[in-house]
Image (tube, rainbow, N blue to C red):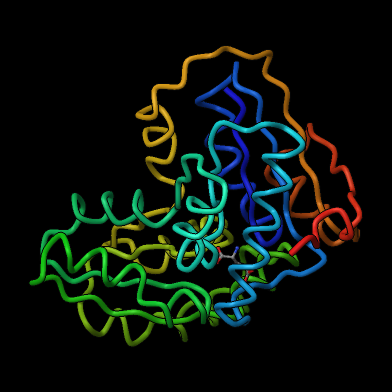
Length: 260
Ligand code: DGL
């Protein structure tokens, strides 16, 4: 199977890493739109257009059998549009996170953190409430988390202060489960858990491989892995080296992507 994965940047490599472990024989093609990141503060229209362009790149160049939208912001707005446009299975990162949270919560009080666009869309809240209208869902946008992670500041005093500031009002609501609704946030999981050891932390990449397996696409490939970015900068290397040190970025021209 050829699996296409995209994200607004390189945070989606947290999802790539999960899929890499579960599908050694599948070919994986990842594209991170580093020239246009962040998506989290863009309009719905722009997020959809960028997502369609990245998906089309993966289908045209690698004939992918499935697209994994490894970006919560794009997952919040673009999944149905990609399905309609390209007519292939599309997996988002929101549904697996929601299903995990449902099994971990005991008191039904669930916190969700993500980019401004993800929180504005209420994508997590809607899915959680569909499963159980009695859930109490408390959400917060944490815009500083993405730059912190991209700078490699995944631990330390400043990071802890920012975490505490963003999570204060969710913790006050007595949440027992916190969904990390952004690709970058799993890298802050250790610090968040050490500050709030009683809260179950749900990573948006959890269960993603199960969703791909359920598609029952069995054609074996040779395990090729290629990771593309639309702009290069030494700062992207920090995060990449934390996640996939053995792979190299291939830079592609944004003109190849901007087709819509
Ligand atoms: N990949 C985005 C997400 O998961 C975070 C970075 C951005 O704002 O583009 O929501």
